[in-house]
Image 1: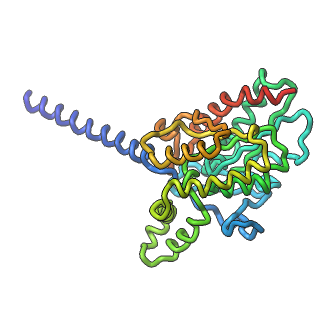
Image 2: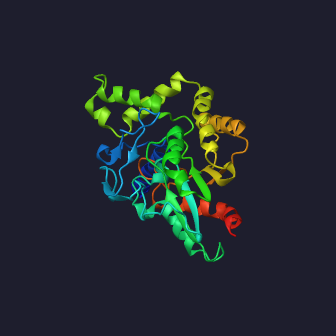
Image 3: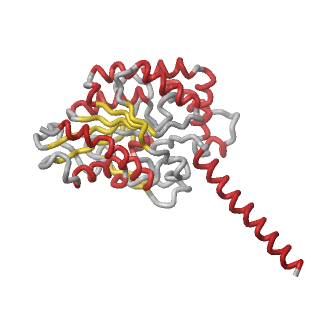
Length: 323
């Protein structure tokens, strides 16, 4: 009898370790791990573009791309429209009178990396707006996605200048994934290239998802103070606000994580430099809620959460655009 009780107790202790270990793994794997930007398929991007930026790139139009890294359970299919946007539809440049048009800006979180095009929060938002009965009757909503994986703030402003302003949007929604406060591709790309060509790292390391990206990020953070880097990046907002009415732009971010000092410091710098910015940190943390893929990009639930938060937040802004 005593032996039986000891055996049961031992099994309970072992089970507690297993369960505890599982949740500890999930905590560090999902919450503590920084978002990673995946490499783009070079066959589907255009890099020989007349731009002030050396490494600026855009998506090729009228193609369908399949994406499934070995850790991703389901294949993601992206459809690029005739303007090289990750979209279900083509959009006319000339906006019709019965259309309310929203431009979505951002990086891979806006692009919808590892999610089918139709499951991206921008597409979900377009459907939600058009299915609403209390928002601008007799109007059609268009949400045009200009997001591109890996983009930093300077590239996002460049893309709006090249692709976005011609659509004459009524509203611009800019989703900040959290990395944009100190991501600077023009400084990082040479480090990325050196990492991939270096003999200091094994092929296994260099081929590991995000290895060289994390090396570049760490190097930049060591070379630049967050204040200097943030100011350098934020300066590109000047050119952005010259081509659009700042009253039409809403910046969205995830609820603040006060444990991440650099990110909060960068947010404060940006808000101090641009006090007129409408910056809404209203999206629940998909990282803490586990609404993410293995690499910390939003999963389907994460895109649903982003859509819901933005939809609820812009309702009054939308009503103001109604005649």
